[in-house]
Length: 547
Image 1: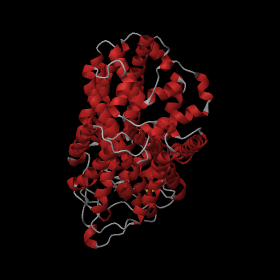
Image 2: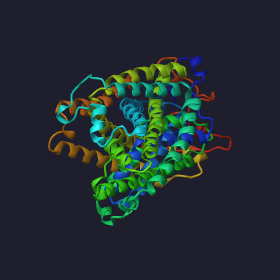
Image 3: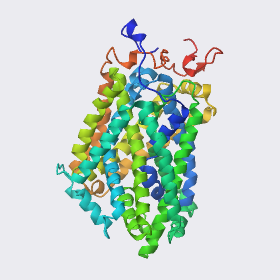
Image 4: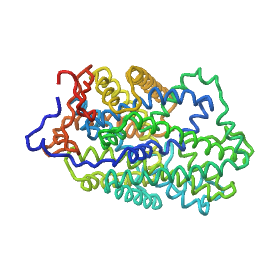
């Protein structure tokens, strides 16, 4: 049955949540969310370390058997029940609301530290013009961030003015975009930024290909190590990259799909988003390894000696490349500008998960919900991360938010849908009603068996690795890792359960019709699909047998 209504009057009201004007707007926004910092600074190194060119095979298998199937799962839940993560999961089945709040809290944590990286990239775009780091990029980054490291990490409120100012700028920009709404803010920014990002990165790739040593870098990146395919760790790495780069399982795609028109082709859109994201990752690999090949030749070392990922690649290796390369300023502006664009479109999608939840919970207008969410997040983010403890705090929270947040939430949601609620027949029929790419048993197998198996193994491997390692994670103090890592991850689940037990106010969007004025689809009937009728024009009109 559908969510109960506290009064007849409330049931006749329509939720004013905003919407994408069309499928193209949604696709750009979804690509903007999926294409983020991980595409640029994580994928190239992961691919290189896990078989080079041979890694493309497990990567594609992971995309087709986990990434896209879980993307479809998010689309189906968000699109059918027309709400934020908590509202949609509650409408799916009352007691599963905690999964939605868990996803919201994961997004909240990621938003707090993601802004710091975006602030760094913004400053480094400017630094590229005069190559302010000089001959010592590593030393300059340490001076710029003033970051505490290793055993010296502690709670500190010593602020770094350059970081503080840039973080404030980032959050002001986020607030402006979010206040403009789904179409005029999120969609409009993505429609501008994503094509600009692609153009900038293509120029960067072309410029990098003509650097001395670029061919050596590409050879290192694409040379296949077929023996690596026999290593289970390589396959786990491929699935991990897909999970982290496609924005699945922590509310983003679920929320975005709730803004889609009812007659949208969900499966066709999912394929476009999935393959667009992967295509950009491969483009990033070409650009990054062309530049690393140049760096290796300039320093007279092998390519494998200069391969790094994450912060080390972006803020140490690339500045070194920029200093040594012809037209280095151009490469710098293109690279760091790309980080800013990719990071910004991802950050607004992360924040939208939280805004949508608050808007649905209290039935607020767009601007009110934006300010209620973004101002406190901006304050906490700036207070915590523009300090000397910003980098170690980011490092620990990112590790646990990803490996124990996103992965665990994806595992729980897939198991709940497939085995506990047994709601996959309903979701399958919803996706197939207007989808150009029809799904069936293969989708069942991917969501119910393959994805949970890989996610479960990933969690076990991560836990064993952390618990059996010599010393603490990255040498940080034990209490620091315990507080901002383990307790933070566990706390998210506890708080999510508590939030799911708090009653929804009578004026919340939960008790309203959708934005089109149509009733919300009823709860899933376990193990039952939807009955197609000739009168139905949208999948939302379909009901399970007996309803």
